[in-house]
Image 1 (spheres, rainbow, N blue to C red):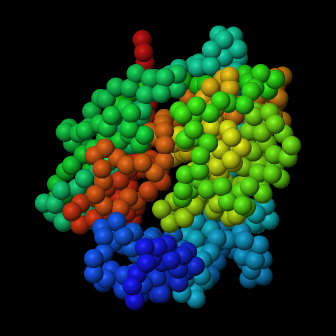
Image 2 (cartoon, helix red, strand yellow):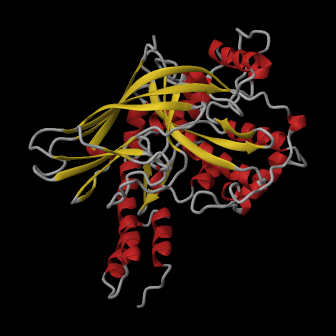
Image 3 (spheres, rainbow, N blue to C red):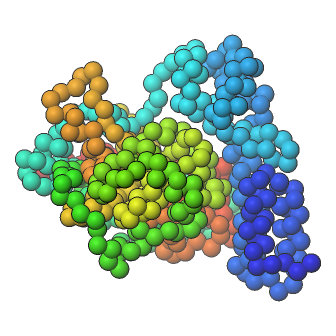
Length: 466
């Protein structure tokens, strides 16, 4: 048979449906067709790679998942496991007729089910960023902004070291390992005065500041029996942001050519599906004020609980996935909010990087920006969401509920101002993450190295400026 131009799309649909054997057979047949162009060939090979990654994420059968959950719920009953499963609290995929569960289900269930959380034998707080809870720092940011009549306040300088360590013998000895480590972008008023300090190896290439996904690039020969280590150390001044937004001053933004891309669809992850339009209508109602619309959408996405996510490269449409999965991580929540804002004519765009705090906490993280006239671009972090005053509430805390819709803490560093963009220099093989860039990327002449072949690290310390 002749293979149509949309063959990779039909094969992708088989992969999404868990029909891996059929998809693999179609890929083999398609690859054997004469005159196959390079783009289609790569698309076919990526679907084969995507199946491998999905198997890596969905690696537990029911018995294996129950065994993991029983480490926290020793007397787990089959009926309560079945109830969680039937209510969609356990992410699963039927692969060639076999039900397989997501490898992070055993921890996600305690975030998604209050009943499951109550059954934990040794309950402990989740290791979440302390900035996700209203605290004195948020109060200080708002006070400083109002007193100084500035939106950028409380700068502090930090030294950060990021490492990427490739497993010993993951690459044959003597072969060149190519690595990209994320590197901060200059964002006036958010992160300034970026200074490279050192790296391993010393020879490196830092992408231009204009690169939407900024990295530092290295090459190093692999040695037998030894890990291949890359690192970069830099200093940067980070500032908090706060905008005291008055809804009465808001006007619909004039969509200039510069803003037009930020209200547009952008397949595959920002598509205005009918389901997205319906959700938007239900949330927004008859509201016309851009800030009030943003508040409603922000609150709605904030209601979607956070949970550890499968790898983005395996998901066809992040915003649609988050709308239907019943949970999402920071990037999935952010992508959904961006899609909803754009659908409502409010320009929105991506930022991502790393977050950190005193006490050794650090993690990768995604957030964004929205454009509100006459204020311009302002930050948003829907994962940290609305800050609700707790038992230790203080006067003025009500004004901080929407801190992360127009404000941002200074305990984060941004590497990316967009998603799904190429590196400088470009990567030759498949990306491990073709949406984001926070951990790094690695390849050699034999192809990409996936996350099971290397790990990354992030360390920081304050810089005394006196």
